[in-house]
Amino acid sequence: MEALPIILAVVGTAASFAGSMQQSKAQKRVAGQQQAAAEQSKRIAGQNAAAIEAETAETVRREGIAANTAQSKRRALAAAGGGTTYGSTGALLDEQRARETDYINWLKKSGQSQAAIEREKGQYSFLTGSAVAAGTKARAKATKTKAFVDLTSGGSNIYSAYADL
Image (tube, rainbow, N blue to C red; front, side):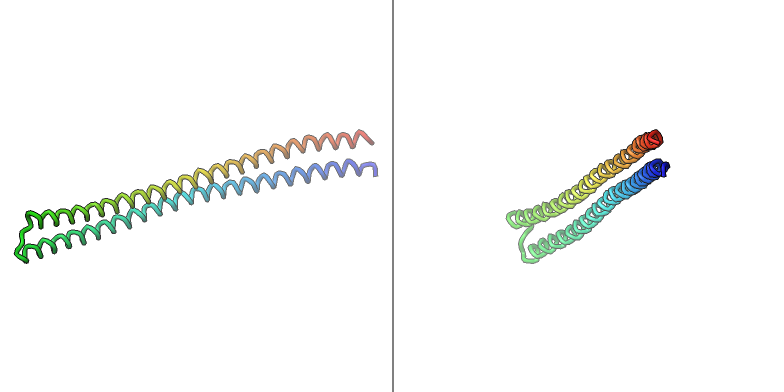
């Protein structure tokens, strides 16, 4: 029975060390998953931004064709009606064309703005996720360091138990 305190101190120290090391490994694994999620978030945001840009380009293309068709029809109707495309009729046609051009330019800028916002959101998610992952990794390192500190103090507990015999 005299060796029991020594055995208990050894087993307790070993169990504490093993548990802390497992916890440290789990924290490292979680940190890796957090970093991967942050990178994936940034990648998805980039893909979303590219999709927004492609959609905007297609909308601008279709609206440009529609504006050109409408402008041609208006000019043809003015000419067919015996009017001229100069003077007040020409000014009206030019004003309508300017409005259509302004609308198309607004579509372009709006799409660029939406894509930029999407990229910024991805960058923010990446930075936030990376910071969380770095914190988890630091916690894993601290847990591992604490395991070795506890192992050292456990060694002194074993020595104390032996000295008490």
